[in-house]
Amino acid sequence: MLIHQKKNKAMEYNVQLLVVMITYITLLIVWGIYQGRKVKTSADFAIAGRKLPGWVAALSERATGESSWALLGLPGAAYAFGLLEVWTAIGCVLGIILAWWVLAWRLRDEAEKYEIETFTDYIAKRHGEVGKWIRVTGSFTIVFFFFFYVGAQFLGGGKTLESLFGLDTVYGMIIVVVLVVPYTIYGGFRSVTYTDVMQAVIMIVALIVAPIAGIFYLANQPEGTVYAHSISDALAQVGKSHSTMMGGTVLKEGTPLYGFLSGIFPKAPELMKGVGAGMIIFGAFSWFFGYLGGLPQLSMRFMAITDARQAKKARNIGIIWTIIAYIGALMIGWLGIALFGPNALADQETVLPEVLTTVFPPVIAGILITGVLAAIISTANSLLILSATELSENIIKPTRRKKLDTKKSLIQSRIVTAVLSLIALLLAYFSPSDLIYTIVGYVWAGIGCTFSVVILLTLFWKKYHGRAVILTIITGLVFTIIWVQTGMDEIFTSRFMTFFVALIVAVLGTYLIPPKHK
Image (cartoon, rainbow, N blue to C red):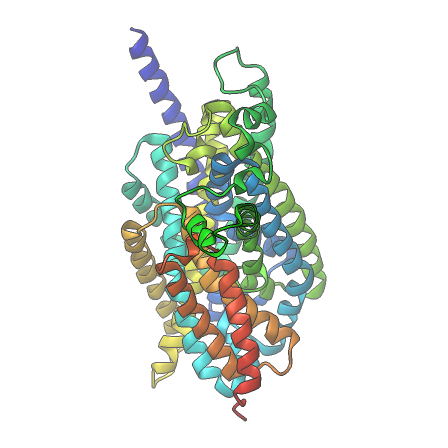
């Protein structure tokens, strides 16, 4: 009888969750379609006519930038590694602040000056002497890596639905695709940015409310029902590996990094441990380098802001949102330790939905968990739009002898978006890694760290020329693939290495290769 009652209660809980989520998703789709009615040209589809208000650009950029990474990946890492992940948060937050403070207004001004429609369109117009080849190499690199990034979002959606309803991850991914693709195809960048606003609000509410409620929940639980009654007690019980920012940096025998360093310092174990700790910390911090203008889906939000006054407003909103969100994401991971204990979850990246469904009644949990799906949907549709416009405008369109009219060009962009979404779904299914943290890290290196070098030097170094740009992009693409595939990423992060190697190649290429004169 008791078992039957528990099953009925669980079923009732899931039904309430489902009703809330369906209601939200329906509103989201309707809002996206409404905004999509205002899309008349390929420029509207690609960059919303460069007329975004500051508050829309800021919330859209943050919702897109954080995605399943901040709501599943980072809390999962905080659950698995404790305070070590503070270094990751520091790197990300500093990178985001620097991007908003130094780069956002400059990229907005540049977009207006050169009348750009896509990310590589800007780089090509700044280095017009080889603009055609920059478009081809840049767009190909972005589309290649973004297949995996979009796949990571689909995977995040599948994991969330599996955690909540026991649905197979593959079916969950398919459901996410069905939800994301239709209004994205219809409304393009404009629909995506305005629906992002709704999603950013729900995300930040979830990241504020969940930690506060979780702390009170822990304090009021009977003895023995939770692992610990506070976050600090939970981290202390796990041990130094979780309770200090340096604890997780202990080198473990048998790891690739241990083997590598023991070969270099065979008779200096203390030095080896110190170097290893530094490499682990720097690896966590290295997310910083991808935020320096190199992530097209974020830089396009900067470029789409309507004027300089709105850019300042966007900067303030974006920075405040970021600081609050990262504190919340870390605390949710640590709350998971206090609630369930270390290693209690089969998949560390389901810690947020597990915490929410434990702490809150179904209606509130449903609203907050919608924040997870909101983040996933936000980033997935942003990446799809960006990939589609890069492919359509910079690779397909130049190969056509006859120029398409406005209507046909818009149709072409929509078809390309649909095709790319299906390819990304297949890649997510066959991906060798099922950790969002890992997949996003690869893309961060190949795209973020490569193009950060290109954007920074394009903005701040007049000598940097088109041929060096092409060499930088190709180097970043090839180096990331080789570094990851040979297992070197397990020794030292590909994020910093790609940035460093691309920067060296960019500088040498600028001096050693003569520019092509117009």
